[in-house]
Length: 97
Image 1 (cartoon, helix red, strand yellow):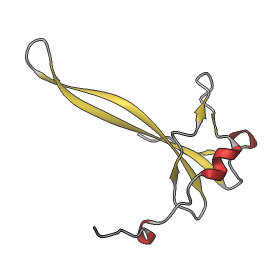
Image 2 (cartoon, rainbow, N blue to C red; image 1 turned 90 degrees about the horizontal axis):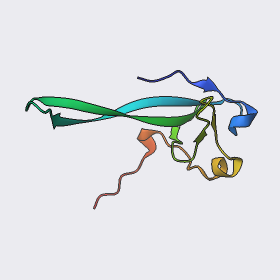
Image 3 (cartoon, rainbow, N blue to C red; image 1 turned 30 degrees about the vertical axis):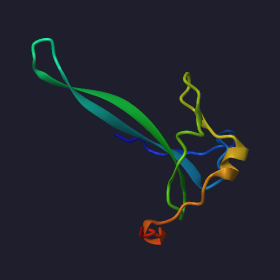
């Protein structure tokens, strides 16, 4: 389940043309119930991405701050400057061991 991207404002710390998108990923494990039946227990893992027009997405989950009362996401300006430059998959070079 993913939410639609929200437009970035000055308070998010993103440049114009960029937005933040959330992807809700689940981690599931099989556990035995008290009666010996298998049950799935799933836990949500929210992930945040910076989307800028014409560039690949960059995951910002670890560096973003979310206000729990409003859900508003912000990133410090100095952190944005340190994010890695995104590459398209076709441009990723794989080193052979």
